[in-house]
Each structure stands twice: as structure tokens, then as C-alpha cells.
Length: 88
Image 1: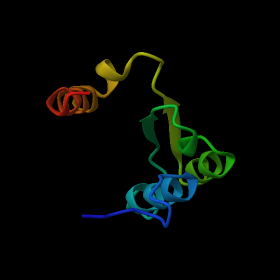
Image 2: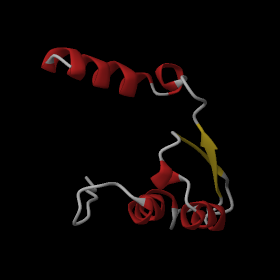
Image 3: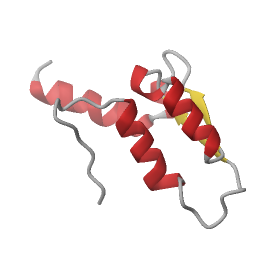
């Protein structure tokens, strides 16, 4: 298990680059392209993140607005249930 964090406890562009490097950087077939779908969180779309993704042959695609339940069903289901359970 890989755990990411920083002093402020917020996910940011530096963590996104670290995550990309860990999962897609040194891989057996670096010429084989990767398509990665991410939500529109600002820490996913900085110039640094986009540049690094391109460098390691990862194409980033934004999840369309209001499409989380279709493209990330686990996220939508578990986060929704968690909110219901906690009374939010």
C-alpha cells in the first residue's frame, strides 16, 4: 500500500505527480499509452501535472461535470452512503 500526504493534509499537484510517478512512471512498456480519467480537482490539472503526465505517456481526461456516478460509481456510491450514515 502506498500512502500519500503532506504537512497541511491536503492533496495537491506535488502529490498528484508523485502518484503518477509511482503508478505509471517506471513501467515495463513506457511506449504503451495510458488513458487516465480524473475529476476536475485543481490539484490534478496544474501545468506541472499535465507536463509530467505527457512525459510518461499518460493522457489525462477530465470526468465530465455531473458524470461521477457513471465514471466513478464506487466513489459516488460509497461516499454517498458514508454521508447518509453520518447524517450529512
